[in-house]
Length: 549
Image (cartoon, rainbow, N blue to C red):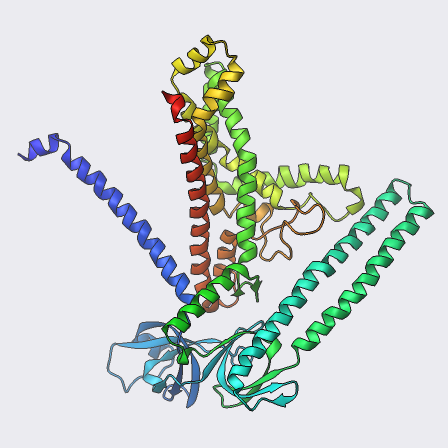
């Protein structure tokens, strides 16, 4: 009976089905864990007030409980804790984020539950998100508006003053990065222009006078904008709030340093839900702060998507043309077989090797030659002779080229020979047959190769560390300055952001939730890119389905 069951093939069906199920459950479980750890970071946790006494001096601690764990008593005693009064084998301890970084040694601390004399969740406990030094926790004592204390509804007025300061700061930042940045960019272009004229021995008095005239206009405009910038900063610095912290001392916080304010212990479910979406939106749209441990990841999202799309534009035509030549034109001999084997083997080369190749060939050789030919006035500062987004896209294009070639060749091989012969028999040339019949029918396979290439390119980090990605990029590869797309600029990447925050951050505990949040965001970006490509592939498959019959 068992022998017949094995011969029927049912065991192998159950085995393969079980393996697929386990794989799917593992992937879904991993994604769910990353999503939970990442998204829970934006939920406003309640702030507790702990009265401590025991193995630590009597004190009060205010903060958010981040984590809990059970620790062997023997390990704590070896670390110097006196736990002789406790008989349990394990002691629970909690990780509390206390914030107030400039007034305490550590903004995260482990606390033994045996030291907690009382734990409360006091109302009116405020959390201040600041532009520097992280969060601040405490009770609002006074609100000072333009030098005078606010008497009526100070908390409501405080929220309005924070929103006012945020708006003024954003206006000042837009002015600084927009109009003022544009003037600085134009002044630099004029400097390079003058140097180029000098190198060409064409710097006449008329040219020099014209350049000086343009500089004078830009500087005059700069002074007006600078005065406007200082005025905005002065207005933003007008108000303060006095807060009583966990030491019992009154601390005056300038409101222009406060980015957001909330009272988590007084919030209902829907208020917390609204706060969750606001904080999630800010994480996606804001710039990073304080060595990537605070703020958002918008430059990293932009850099990742821009680099991947640039890579796709480069790799697709090269991969498709190479595959068409190998399948349709190349002779079927030993040389062609060796080329195919070499292409397949290229897919197995470690990605860091491509990074070294990109640094040596693209950056130093090709980029250095471009600088010598087209940008001699910029010397000794390199323009294209330094890592940038174009070299990253080219390096990843080479890395993913075998994927596109192999996938396209498989698509071409599935097209029946009778289709080619029929087209040629009707009088079409081979080029017309390729362009109107073969390539459209193979387009779903081309898109499949592109999907695989995008998925791999978006997740690669090692080669990018050599050819363009940086920890913090001051500007995006696209802005309002001519020529608007700056392929020579360095950029931020979500994968490198995870590495930097997770392994290079000076504040590990503060950065840990950001690692999960960024990882979830990177997976979401890859899924979004793949869904877009799958949609295009399905559309092409339906469009050219009639050619298959």
